[in-house]
Amino acid sequence: MKAGAYNASFGRLHCKGVHQLIWIVFPIVLSIGLVGLWAFSVWTVQKTERQFGRHGKLVRSHGISIHYVDVGPTEAEGVDLAPIVLIHGASGNLRDFEVSILPELARKHRVIALDRPGHGWSERPEAHDIDEPARQAIVLHDALCSLGVERPVILGHSWGGAVATAYGLQFGEEMSGLVIMSGATHPWKGSTAWYHRVLAKRVLGPLFLWLIVIPFGRFLADAGVTSNFAPDPAPEGYAEAIGLSLLFRPKHFRHNSTDTRKLRSHLAGQSQRYNEISLPTIIITGTRDQTVLAKLHSYALHEQITGSELVKLQGVGHMPHHVRPDVVIDAVTRLAAGGAPKPGVHVYPPETDAQREALS
Image (tube, rainbow, N blue to C red; front, side, top):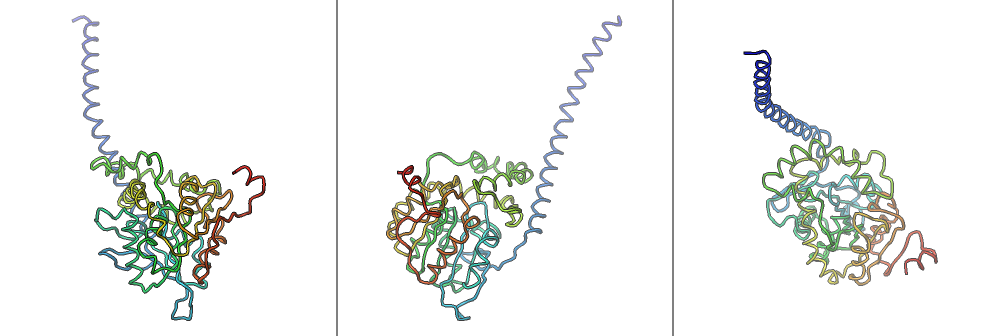
């Protein structure tokens, strides 16, 4: 055999051998990588749960444990003010209130903050309708009854606003007042983020959770916080303070995704009944809220609830309880003391003539 022919033959054999080696090695490397991501995810979840462990108490309701904190003076201690209940929004937990308005409210009031079913440290039943605000309201109502909470003022933020309005529709006669803060109360146009649809897939969903969301989701957490607070700056260390990484646990992220994906359809029916709410109601919204648009939700809700008070916070985003806690605390404590809403629209700081003219 000539040298040239030999070299060509050797080259073909060499290429074939390399291709065969790649087909053997690549699946092994890929498998090792996937197992590594899965192991890292398991370790991350365990670390998160150690770092942000359950710090409140548990109460049973509808076969599950609801996590809550119950602070401040009680009726037995001579307090005749209505208790205050705080319901958090999507992607959150009760710690959001602990680093904002809860400490000040608890100076004179009994305050109960709860983790919604499937969030924070609350369990979630397998019932198919638990993603419905009305169903979550029932679960929280029965939990509060077990705790001896009577005639509370209910505050709901964002997704929690949907639960709070559902609570008012079902149990309004048992309440002292309702405060809706940046509440998601009405259906909107468009769709939710693409990954919610991925997570709903039977096979792809779990793979996406364990191999993408948990290992890499935490890198997007800060961007999410910034977006949620915009245009206001987020408090330093906010994500750490509220244990935001608790969201990036498989079940909890999926529960949050399901709640978000299905909310619009639930609100289509619920929003038709808001004119039935007759209890004292104060609605608080930031005029620059880009998460839950004020005009679509808060303004519309105010039009439907007779005698309600609409508070517009000029230039404020989605988190009024962090940016203008004074306004939120005033609203809640007024109702807890038996005060009435101030019907109509109230703007803080007051609008100038030029601003009113521009909006007309």
